[in-house]
View 1: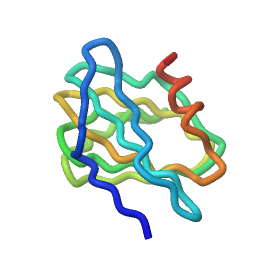
View 2: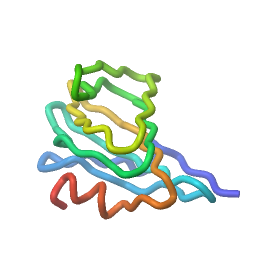
View 3: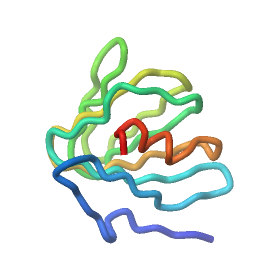
View 4: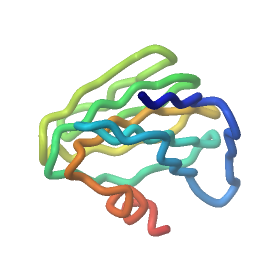
Length: 113
């Protein structure tokens, strides 16, 4: 059994979005993404399905056909290869559930970290 507290040791950075691996299960990787207001994850895609949940704040979730506003408690799931972006409208904390085959390195590459 593993546990994680998404708000423990939470850090924000004025220069970039902060990506923190929280735990890895037999089938997913759970990632915390901390945004200051106005920060952006540019348009990108992954070869695997993902789930994104806003734990705190408000995010504009950009998709090819439209932008969806996600607020605290909102959840969205994407199939593989769907181009999307995230922009924080206010300080926000997001949970990203990745496939076990996906990598944190790829997530950081979106941010050029």
